[in-house]
Image 1 (spheres, rainbow, N blue to C red):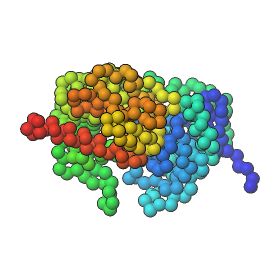
Image 2: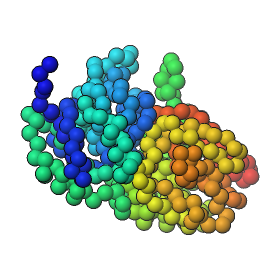
Image 3: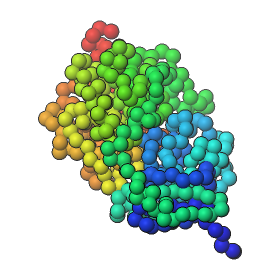
Image 4: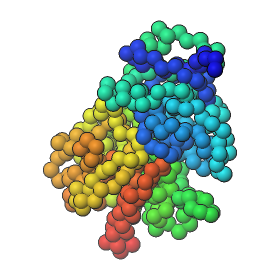
Length: 387
């Protein structure tokens, strides 16, 4: 077979080049490169706001074979900057498919590259840390390699970068859609028992659905909301969502809000991912950048209080330094991959958070009970107040 000219190029900041076949949108983007080990859910991954500023390498080779559909979007548009896959996406073969992956990406301005040795690329990420890259797609195969490498090196990285503000909603809104179930699809929460204020640092839709499914009327508020804004909603609980970027940068405005809510109220508070990290900052802990982060749907986490091991879905490049958690804050969960912190709670208050994504979109549902725990804490508060 005659060799065809590559139509896409992935340039790493150290000068390493990967050529392949482009799909989706044309053009160029610079970002941090991470790998994701999930075997399903590429559409949910690409629309997860936690991937802002990142290109995702998929270690599973069958990407695109089930197509895309509107129900699987976790945000209105893809947020990940691009995708790297081993095999070119094929025509979709699934009864739910509404559009092929390449067309879906092209309409949304996201670049893909196929035909890449993703195993080699993943090993490089693990050994050297998440690199800065430039990804280009040109149907004519014309690439200025020196410029691509130079722009990869010029990418500032995610440390010190507040991306939550960019992916957050700009005004408050209410959410009542519940989780998808056969055969009716998504439901509606028509008889809520609680009001939850969800701070949107990049919230996935399935997280909001999970809150609604346990009885919450969800009021979603912008990342920059103040404690006065939050408490004006008279909530029964406060939720801190997932999101992208450096938690210390987002914490410049989020941490004072969290501290004031904790100081002024006895409200139950539940955080996930970036929300977990910012709760730790508000309680006096610190966060650090990881070598290559945790991205996938097969991460074992141990509950230190029960001994139970859960298989979880994760997406984070920063972690809480458990050694900096103050007295009165208990480490509840740890990663069995590297021992990093995956959960905490306040000793004497219904305030807790986890590093992973218990809404499982995509991923296992081992941790869905955490939403029930949050609902139980709100019900207990209501009972104590005679509500």
